[in-house]
Image 1: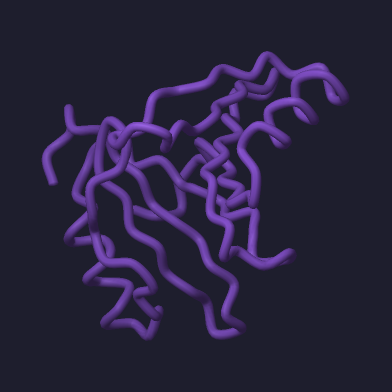
Image 2: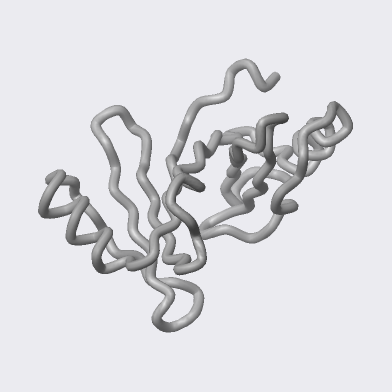
Length: 127
């Protein structure tokens, strides 16, 4: 089932969201869109690439260089709870349990070397 995963997004945690917006828009020339956060002043950014993979930026001043990006796999058919639970039983480390994300649900896991990866599904799909 997981062999048919597609990468839907790559998430960056950045110290300064405005600085990231300026760099990726003005320096790299990406079409960066500022998105309103759930709380005032907690905006985030999204830039779609030609390959269909979105780059997403969240402000996190505590993030250290080298901790991101995080590859996010889409789960178009849903089932995030069962998938995360099944991977945990096989030895994956749950870093962030299934939780609310913009427009859906996400969870972060880590491989044996500590590399974090994430799963995302929209609220339109069954958990």
